[in-house]
Image 1 (cartoon, rainbow, N blue to C red):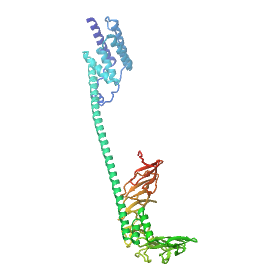
Image 2 (image 1 turned 90 degrees about the vertical axis):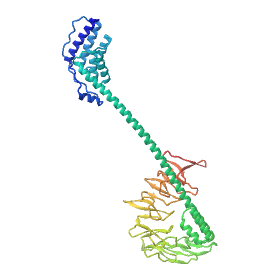
Image 3 (image 1 turned 135 degrees about the horizontal axis):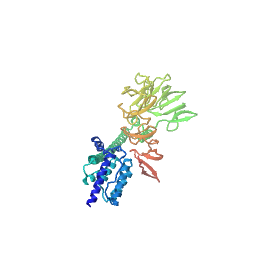
Image 4 (image 1 turned 60 degrees about the vertical axis):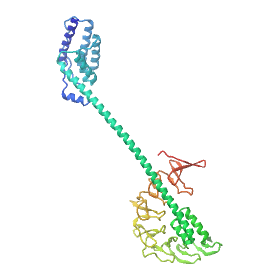
Length: 498
């Protein structure tokens, strides 16, 4: 046994010398260690091909020892030639023959593993090198450098792993917090939408109650003037139709009729009270009827008298005591039932009064509103303007050459900005708008009642539904903006995914 140990030690010493000459140990500098610490793989070390010839020690070796020695020398040669994989295989065969790993094989294995970036093997091999109690040869300090560098590398890897875990935990916490915040925001938006819808419903209910109260007041007054005032204040909806029907039953106006391609009016007995001599005629409003002949318009009373001569190029029906007229020369203004002008102002365009206000335009073509006293509560500032309906009016401003529409309140304040391609009058407390080629609904406050995603939306029917189409699906929209469908005679809810 002593002889065997002596032979192995001698071989080890010889190999140490050869190793020092053939492949000088390269100390791992502080800079290299720092590079490893920063988790970057160390670059392979430059190799010097072995030139020293190996001499077998002059001792008697067993066949196993000779084979191990041969494998080691092959490994060393392969390492010198840059054949790392082959060198490691020879080292494994060397250890297998001896039955254990020597300091020399651990040394060479650690060098190869470190230079090829296999830091785990390099660390294990360098530790095994020290555990074998080698002499402090030229490779000892190199093994210390490799061992320290690999330990630093794995320490940094562990620190990075812990940092990544902390970061992941923080990211997960943030994601959970964001998800919670998003859910809370969604609930807030849903609650806000419900509140707006509830407010819109209350507003609609208030409007309905107001309309009912005003109609009952007209019934109690039981005069044509009271009914006419109600119709002027509520120009749309079922209540207006009811009021007109009741008024006509109690105080029927003469009925427009056509005879020999001319218009006239007959009483309830069919007797002409206004001769059939007009090219066109409108129904009686506020005791007068608009009639036209040869392109000019005037007004007649129930007895057929032309109380206002036919001299206007255009004329509206009477409302709020006035009619909007335009002379052949283009001068536009308002007249009362005697033909007297409202104020001294002349406009480029005028339209009939609704809800106490009428749109008018100045010479520059800008629109504002006046009341039936001649006052102008809303100045000239719009490129177009509609009559008021439900205390809301459609106005438009040009964006370049394109007209954009919005809504204003009766006090002149904006309900919405002028951002729509189309905007319709309010009906049942809601209005239809068009934007980017699609339709939607807004409520009385100007808030979205539906998304702007429909190919079309019709006016509301008497049953409280409007027809619409979205994604090729025909649906009904109620006055809350909810969608429904008619299935086998039943109305069932429809929910779109987005």
